[in-house]
Image (tube, rainbow, N blue to C red):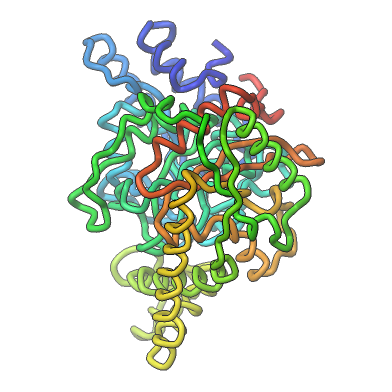
Length: 492
């Protein structure tokens, strides 16, 4: 079959259960697509055909024995920040170019238990630091909708792989928008869960109080299937919260759009730099939700101006601490012929880390230094609490909050964005991570250049089912999530 990549996760599951095709046939189909198409997209860092086909054969045997799960035999791509036993795990960095993980991240292990077939590891901004996937040591990933544009970041490889139909769904991580923004740039659905909902064990840390794994796929329904695998408490992760996970697939119609109160922060729609096409498409999607029975309620989020400076103090500070372990001694990149221990540290880190990672380490180290810790880091943590309280006050009068996922559509590769401009592009996403809230991106149309636009819906704590349900119903009434880039239409 030449069109297996066009099937939804539900259709793939039903096809496997009904013996319309085998997991081996499905896996071979995706591997052929990767071999033919990915040279143009560069979404994969490592493809694992031997392991994938072995997993597919095992899945087919389980199907025949009657012991299969709903997702047994369905392929998946993992962001190269999740440790995978026996497979190179790089975090997009020269520092880890030679690191073969001796264990699986919980997300990967749960995928194996569910019977998912790992196609390989996908590209990302180095150590998840970036918004374009250009900072990867392995080169820039391309946006399938326009190969001279970025796919977003840091989960750009995950987004590009799904948008080019090189994987039916993929895992991502979101520290300040790294699931939602690339999902927006690539016309996908992407869910950033509540902090603590998905285990961080085996997920290489950027900023420990902000990082959260989540699913990326074409639709809310597809995301719900992967969320059922990823979510749940993990004793091995001290930040994992022991709150029972939902059956996200069963709950896809649990929330009625009729009567839903959608908060519209007036500050968000007056941000300097908000593209006119993005604003128009988002407003059209909100009008559609209003036609479906939702009520739009104007709200104030008064801490908006504090989002970027607060995030870009806390995240680099935590990165500075987390990346201390990469010193050229125990594992990872080591410089050649160091003259002494100090030289080993200095050259291993300066040669192993790229410019953006070095920039954030330096910012974070400065913020944590003795003379500035109280003035910067402690104050930022106090402002973080005010941002959280701002959201909680809003949720007293609304059920979800709507915003663009990004102020613009995808940038051109190599565009002369200075770091501060790139950081300001995170204005709509980073507050969600600072507050630990869940949020989802849904595709809602295109700009004048036919690049995708995304709507972001932000929920209260543990409301992933509600967000998936609202987007699912919106997607039953629209077809933006079904649109495909030309490269995705290529057959093999």
